[in-house]
Length: 139
Image 1: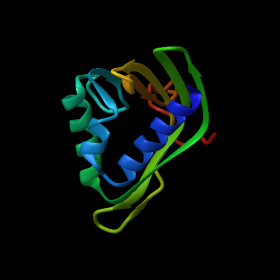
Image 2 (image 1 turned 120 degrees about the horizontal axis):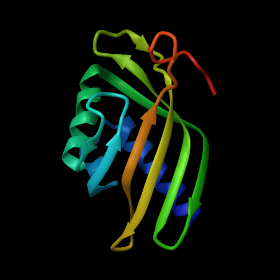
Image 3 (image 1 turned 135 degrees about the vertical axis):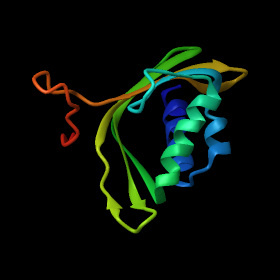
C-alpha cells in the first residue's frame, strides 16, 4: 500500500509540473481540507484547493515540484505521508525562482478503490522573535 501512495504523490508532482488542474482534481477528495502556506488558514473543498493551485500556476511560465525524504505509512483505507517539498520554476517574466522548502503532510483515504488526498498541509517554521516565516532552510 505504501507503493500506491508513493505513486499518487508522483502523479501529484507530475500534475503540478504540467500545471494540469484536471489531473490534480483527480487526486483530491471532494471535501479535502488543505492548510496551505497562503491565506486563509484553511482551504475547504477541491475547488478551493484548485483555486490555490491555479493562483500559483499564473505566476510561473514553467513550474517544478521537488519532494525529498518522503515517509509513508499506510493501512487498509487510510494513509499519510510527510516530506519536504519545493515549488520552483521560471516566472512569467523569465526570472528563475528557486522557491523555498516547506514541510508537507498528505493524508489519504481509499475512496471507491482510489487513494485520494483528504487533507494536506504545507508549512514553514517561524522565528518567534520576529513572527516571520523562516524560508531559507534546506533539508
